[in-house]
Image (cartoon, rainbow over all chains, first blue to last red):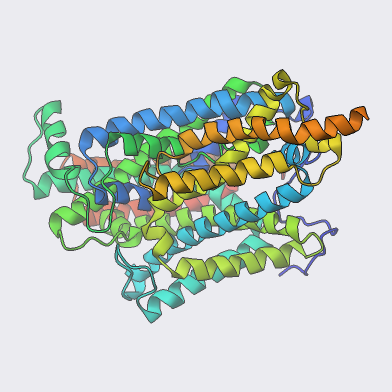
Length: 478
Length: 58
């Protein structure tokens, strides 16, 4: 183990964070291929094994799932290409530095806190996914679809062991896991495809179906795999539009929310945003569909067995290779998530050691992973995660493209020296308040609310900037 | 050596897909699919560190 390092000590085992407070120079720009590989790897994750089955639990029909995902993922790719990448390749700044220029350091700290907490829950879900693989080996009771709390000592021990291991590695051995993530990306995608092939064959066998034409396949999809109809108890009914919007908005924090400014600031051209299609169509199309087939098969064989447990699902399909896939998929994605959460928290406590903060963050994640509430409600959580971070994306978009058209200052916090831009802060909080009201009042569901939410945040930021900036301009004039 | 490891890695990935495809075609039993997938997984992870991400280190 390496010694504890202070914040100022060079730390070799962590990702290189370059050009944090300056535009990325042309010499460091990357080609199209880099982004294809990065997105394909990042979006074929452990949580895909939860999301696919949850669509089935929500009563998704064949057309709704297959076409809804196709359209939703296309909208996500277009959002990266036309919202995120054009700003990233012009400003070439990290999300945090760009936000700091607009919002001020104090507001960015609040944003960091929100981001860090969300990352912790997300990493907790990945710990939960990995722990289900250990349930197959050690045969302890695992949580069901409606469980919110840990249901066995074995489960508690498994999640704590997995979580603590991930935390230690995230703090001390980031580089090793980053390499394993690179090694496993292509292999993992193929294992996901294998899940789908094996699951589909088992459906043919159990339903005694003989495929003579494409219409036979479609008939099997509609009548046995994705039958539609009522959702399982405790789940929301998912229609075509639910699936489309979920696929579009599950990464809303990254595209419309502008988190991936930090990624695309390295892109030579803004059209490289279409490279995200690799992640969307491998991870959020093929992997979701494959995982959903395995769960639909489980329900077909035993309708009473509604538990969404990636470990047993993967083991039944592909044996030990499937289990390794579950562990690696959860681990390699939890690792950078914990690391990023640690970085977000470290911005709040800059004097604390980055290793110590990451380790403590990982321990919190391990405890979160013990509770299946987030994982079993992952569809809702992912929508909430996007909603919370999305308004700041609207603020960045408006600030970059529109603010000067309203005779307002670009990068107002930087220009005025403010630590907390109240126009941006209030636009964020009021948007979340209105969106929460829209959901609570039943006007719209959480899966859709980010769309009106973006326009609300954009309009509020302009209106509040008019009020807020005017005073400063008067002061400046005086 | 590096080139050989690279070829074996990519072949193991191709081979990884053969058992599930043969299972779909009704030409292989599931236990055999699971065993062969594990074998090709081991081959992949044993050979891929010999060449992937090695450019910078060299």
